[in-house]
Each structure stands twice: as structure tokens, then as C-alpha cells.
Amino acid sequence: MDNPMQRRTFLSRAIGVLAAAGALPLVKAQTSSQASEALPSFTGPQANPYWNGVNPFVVYPQKLPLLRLTDRGIQLETPRQYFRTAFTPNEAFFVRYHLDLIPNSIDLSSWRLHIEGNVEKPLTLSMQDLLTRFKPVSVAAVNQCSGNSRSRFQPRVAGGQWGNGAMGNALWTGVRLMDLLQEAGVKPGTVQLQFQGLERGPGPEGKGSNAFMKSLDWNDPVLQECVIAYQMNGEPLPMLNGFPVRLVVPGKFSTYWMKHLTWIRALTQPDDNFWMAIAYRIPDTPRGNTTPADVAAGKVKTVPIGNVNMPVRSFIVDPDGSSKLVVGLPVEIRGVAFSGYGRVTRVEVSLDGGKTWRVAQLGEYYGPYSFRTWSFQWKPTQPGRYTLAVRATDEKGNVQPDEPVWNPGGYLWNRIERQDVVVGTAS
Image 1: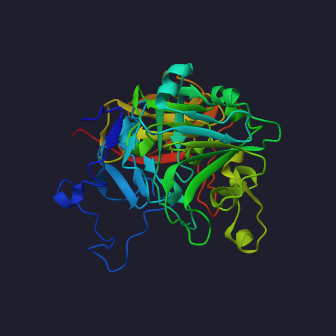
Image 2: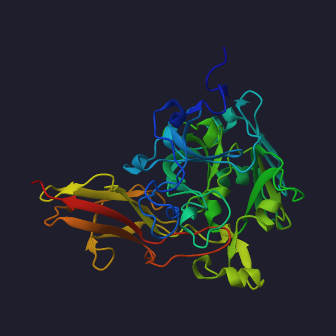
């Protein structure tokens, strides 16, 4: 029998939908039983009860029940309760693929990482090479889908209608990208590094998109911080999160965090493949903000989303509004915050929907790109409906805004989060 570290094999693509087994209530059509008109859409600024997207729970190999957006390519969202700690459990970590042909098994005896292109010495490295020839390093970093919270956009945009759960934080352990590149000897004239994994499929027809590839500029400082990770929270990566290795790009969106990384190429010309030239582009404006009218008129210049870091964000995890709070009983309001621009230095909580703010207590610091937990102790003294809100500030002085953003890709959402709660009396 193969050693588990030598081969991982999926038993099946998807084991089942819990709702179909009666473990969860089925999602019914949004029609009121007491009125003929349809209920309001669950998306948009007023949708704070829907922290996650409204999708069925499914179980995939090596995963707890997660919310399925699509199964080809696989998109699975992490439920809210798994964000109570700074590090997201591997089995609860979200999954995002673009194409439907992904590996079910990888044999490490034959798998190799290739470094090629404009280099002095092309390399072909085994997993044993990575484990023994290069110094291991670890970095705590948030991996967040570019379209996280896309369901909030108004007007609606195409793409997976994620709630807030297309993100996760892990301690990634592996080797420095620059250590490998130093051995290969990147030659003058290199303008970008291209990364490709084992994800393939038809893609958008006629676009040459059958292989998922992303590139970073050779002069981008983030390359100094990139890690080729073979461990995630102290364990081998789950298959659906990129086994055997994936690229970790601290501060950048997950589209650059190449799963099943197998090829690194030094390019002498800018990468014009579909996933760079057409997909994952944002308006070259503050916050990537524009209007449908300007897009339709062709007035919007776009740049790759890799040109920016992830904006500062914070989230309320508890309370979730599913049950009443009680006057006189203490409540711990808590959640997580992060920024692609560095350390979160301040989190503030509002009990009145953002009119007034109070400073929350920050949890342990695990590094500039990690989730940082926060908490605020509250003992409600009056019954009624309250709107909780949270905002974060990072070390560069970026403060979460209270204005929405709009662009056709559904990217860069970081508006202040709100949560309605009801406080009742004990008598």
C-alpha cells in the first residue's frame, strides 16, 4: 500500500448533500406563504442576516460540510462559525477552482516542480528536494478569493455569489520562492514570473483558457515574501487546497496562490494569457470603483488585480442574530480582521449601526498578513433591536470605509459589516 505522503486519492468528488438527507432544512423558493409577492433578494447592503451565501451543504474528501456554489469548477464556502479563531481549520478551509479538470491523486515519486524559461539553470525539483535542500520557513497569511462577498454587489454582477466565507487563514510552511529562483539564476530581461499548476479544463470558449496560469511582475516586492508551501497548519495540504505544494502570496488575493504548483517560468514578455489579460482585472481607480454606465461606455481602464493588495476588512462572527440576547446578561461580540497592507492596529465596534464607536480588544498578533481576532464585552441594559457594526484600521492608516464599491468583476468589497440583534427581557 502506498505511503499516505506518497499518494493521495479522492474516494469521490462529492459524498452528498446534507439537506437531501434531512440533516438541514431544504432551501425553499423565496415566496412568502402569507403574501403573493416575492420576498426581497437576499443579496445587497440590507442582507446582513446572510453572512454566508445561500447554498446547500456538501461533503467532499478531507472536508467538513461546506457550502457549495458550484461543482465544476469546485467552489466551496466556509461557514461562519469556523472564523472564531485566528487560524481556519484545514478541513473547513474554502475551495475555489476555475476549471473542472483537477487532480484526484498525485504520486510524489513522479511529481516534480519545474523552474524554466529565462533562467541560467532550469531546475526539476522533487518533494524530497524541497524538504531537504532548502531552509523551511513559515508565514501566517490570509488566503481570500477576489470575489469574497460578491453577493453584496448592487447592481448584481456575474460570478460566484459568495457571502463572507471565501477566505481563510493558515500557517503556511515551505521554502522561499526566492531561494529556488536564486539557484536557478533568473537572467536579465525577465519581466514576469508565471505560475501554473495542474488545474485544466475547457474554460471560456475561444479564449485559450484551458490552463490556469497567473503571473507576477519580476519587480513586485511581494516576490521576496512568497513561499512555496507544502504544509498548512502543520499538516500536508488537503488535495482541494493544492497538494502537494501551492504558492503563498502574502497580502494578495488567492487567484495568485497557485494550487498544485508544478511550473514556474521566467518570462521576457508580459503574460497575455486569458487569466491575466482578460480575467481578474479591476478598474484603475480608487478602491477599483466604477459605474455600470462607464463600463458600458468603454471609459474604464483596467489593471490586473495583482496590482493591489487586499483591502483592510473586519467581520462580526458572534453574535449571529439567530437568537435573542437577554438584558443584563453579558455578550461577547467577537470576530476577525486583516489587511493585505500590514498589521491590523485597531478594531472598533458600534452598537448603534455606526453612529458611535468603541475600541475593541485585539487578540494575539501572528504576523502582518494573518487574521487578528478581536472582542468587545457588552452587557445590554435595554431591550430592543440593535445594529452592531465593526471597522478595522491597519498600520498604513487604511480605515474600512462605509461606502459600497462596484466593478464588473465583483472584487474588492470591504464595506463595514453590520449585524442586527434583538435584546429581550428575562421576565
